[in-house]
Length: 273
Image (cartoon, rainbow, N blue to C red; front, side, top):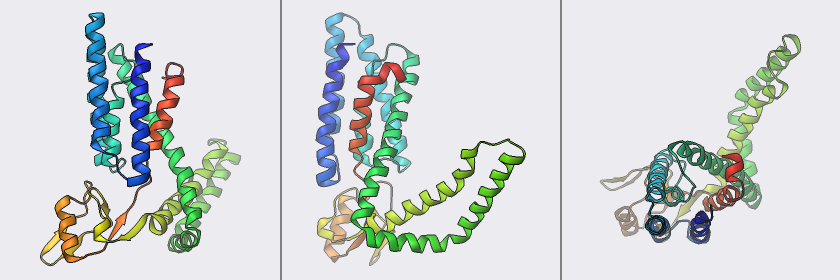
């Protein structure tokens, strides 16, 4: 396992750079993500030559390809931004595969760990954002709750129905009755947070490639479409030409979730995966 310590160290420093960039610029440079892929594969190749066993390199290459597929799937599913997806590529090459089954246990296990870490981190960070913009968040929460009050009342009724099923028929656990109201408040919380804290009217001079539009923008005969790829360089040039401010949806810097998942997997990868 000692050969993997260097790989984890490479990933650790790459993610540290990514975290700094994500917080400062809200994007992760290609030189960080692709350098990680290049160094991981170069190390695996050099080590394979040294031990005269190329399985170490081939398993790593397979991991990179697997995580590249995961990255694209999460990117086009609007779960990850482009930089986050690219950061995932290199991480696929650091895990200790020794058989095809390890791609399932280590590969899928790490993805699951990353998503769990991401949910926990995002929840904590979102609470911080909500408190920082408390007044506008509370107003947005009240509006969204009022618009969906009927849904909440129906879920409360369902809550009591499930409780009665537990007492009379004993066919469902207690906790199941709380799922529906809980999911409702999570939905209202996320929607209110996005509307009050994550959407910002942005000057064209401050736009960067990949920024996500809230909706399509019409400028003369041109229409800038809201896409998963965000704004292109030509889109930004057009917006700057006309001095057009646009509503941009900002995401939560997600790179820290990678750092949490990496550290956790380093210490507990064999125990849990």
